[in-house]
Length: 224
Length: 319
Image 1 (cartoon, each protein chain N blue to C red):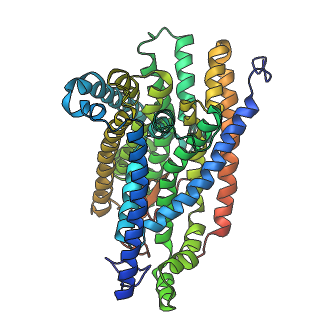
Image 2 (image 1 turned 135 degrees about the vertical axis):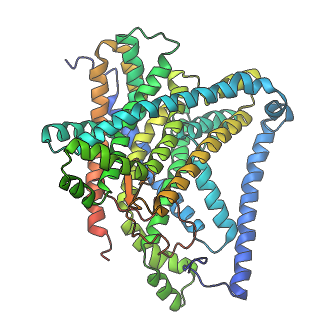
Image 3 (image 1 turned 120 degrees about the vertical axis):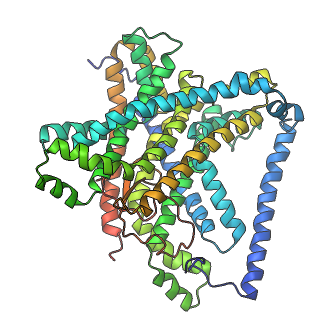
């Protein structure tokens, strides 16, 4: 029944490994960039606030497919930006991570901003009364509490990101969706089985993430 | 505290000077980045007038490529939401059923399709139509895109519907039971009509997700939507890749920005409304999980200060 799963011919585990790598690199990148964006959006400098707002609104309303295809066709093929990648596989992977970070960071930023809103005003006021400046208030007092309250929304962002890595197939990164496209075309008599295998793969990736981070979010949430 | 952020003091003379310094530094960084981008573009001859002018001078670029592409995008999105709505409503109500033999399988179906990337559903639908049906190959991409979007979004809408119904006060069901309504009557005459008000903003935001996902069909299935027009334009107007992407992205952004603004207007109206419960189902940030904001939420009660985005302060009730 599973004859079609010719692992010599189709590198199933390798493809899912690329998916995992895309997810992990993009998650770390978008967490950092999203936190910076959130900091900009609440900062006292109007220009930074404006930039943050504009960036988030533009990126959130652009399809991820457009972001990634533009990164490949525009950045790489037209402007020859290679991000230090040596062959086309590596360049594609790096461009995909860049696009995913640019896109996902907006959702991290919005989640964090709503987390900042859950921190009681008194916390920031007390911090200011101690003489802390904006950066200190944000990094020492508000953000640590905000992060603890947004673990669940960030888990949803991470799950959405895991699913969004399939979009990298549009620029030829050899991850799970691209392999499925190839297999479903070659093994056309068992398309339901092929689809089930890949669907199962994604459930295996997303379900434990959701359960684990759900548990973490309950543990770290600030009891108020 | 309504117009100032509580994260920083009212700037005094020194803080003002420092803020100016940061503004200038930030401008310098932005300027350097834009200069680098423009310089690279000029190097690759992407700034040349003939690459950008067709978009304002040549109406054929709009009538032959962009507008038909936009129309296809809208067609797929409209079909997807219209078909997904009734399915989603049925699934959402089914998941709330008192009968476990209905609610458990429906729950499994909803969770399954929410866990699968929509691209996999589209690829599978495309091949399934090719193998199992005799849908003509010109129209097959549209079928595949709409099928993938419907399967995925019906399950998302199911969760929105469920959250909307759960957001209603329990007294509504109790009162309806007290006057002798049956379960079906309670759902169709009491709960659903009220839930629709709470759900509307989330449904419009979901439309944004659908519009964005149609672009997948253009990139991998050969569906002639807006994004896929980039290649035809660059082929006909002299490799103006950057210009074409800019215009296409702007069209997407404009369309989605209108939808997003409409959604937040609806949300504000539902929240202020005296008739309803004030509960609103909004899209959870960055994902496709609906969130219910309780009416008592004081949405300005945080150090974030002004400018709260949609979805702030929501209470998750979906899991």
